[in-house]
Image 1 (cartoon, rainbow, N blue to C red):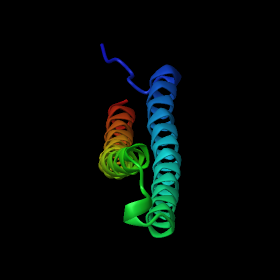
Image 2 (tube, rainbow, N blue to C red):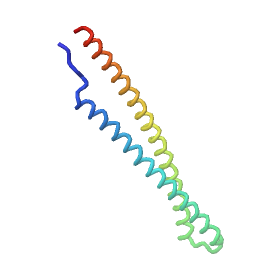
Image 3 (tube, one colour):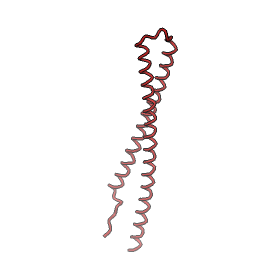
Image 4 (cartoon, helix red, strand yellow):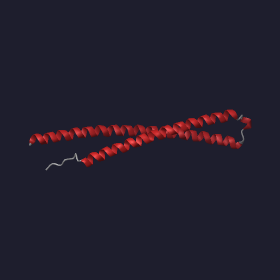
Length: 119
């Protein structure tokens, strides 16, 4: 008594899983791009503020704001780097799943051929 594992439900689940990973990867790429753009803008603003405000003209509040700005810029850069790592992991996972899906399909086709040849 053999069981056919190539049901439409299994194929749909596999495809849906791959599609969800691809959507997550695309979404992460968009977020990463946004973070990089924000980090670039923060750097530009920080540079302008530091150039336009001489050291002796900076009040404690402005100096504190610039320091906080620098901290936020660093955090944004770190988040962008982490997103890049996650994107690489997702891309790798997608590639591995696609490879496994092809191998599974080939095995199922070979099994079906063997079963057909026995009849």
